[in-house]
Image (tube, rainbow over all chains, first blue to last red; front, side, top):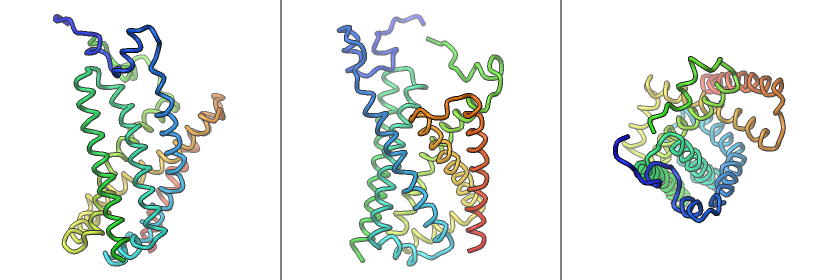
Length: 138
Length: 126
């Protein structure tokens, strides 16, 4: 232990949470949005992921032009883009809750969250862009 | 603040229970699927890019290591999907009785094995 650390350094609380606690106002009351996002994306992912996986099973042994032709038609393009967005939004909430449980130093938590969120947004953007390129080029 | 975290309790203090084991697996497969989604984005980019990028990606996915990754991904996917539906039922306030929770847990494991088997059978038959 040795050196004393400030409250914000040893806890995994966010700024608004710390502020509310200092003012004796209780929690920041913004957890429900995240909870709902996790459940709503979960519900959306049931049909979307099954649609995508079944399509992948059909495309598993096909060549690039068959896959490109499939991805560039309107319904697969739309559902794949929605799948990618819902998947990465769901991962954003899930991975954050894992980080909150296992990263206990505030500086490290903020750094880990930024890296995770940056990577996820990059992947989601790249996935959507790839489908858009195929769809718009048809 | 060097206190031990809960997994430390597992071998010594906690008896193995399907409920806690599936809960941990849900998280593990969730993280695994998030890591695996890099491959999903990569595949979409490869289809859009075509040419060399696609053939290299295709060769990687068809290699023994690629097939192993896809197999692990499929197991994680079907488990997380089935157990996720179980979690949504709990969120709706259903299935909390210990007996029901155990039964739904075993149902999730069975469904995971069956769905994974069906998926790979479909690939093999096509």
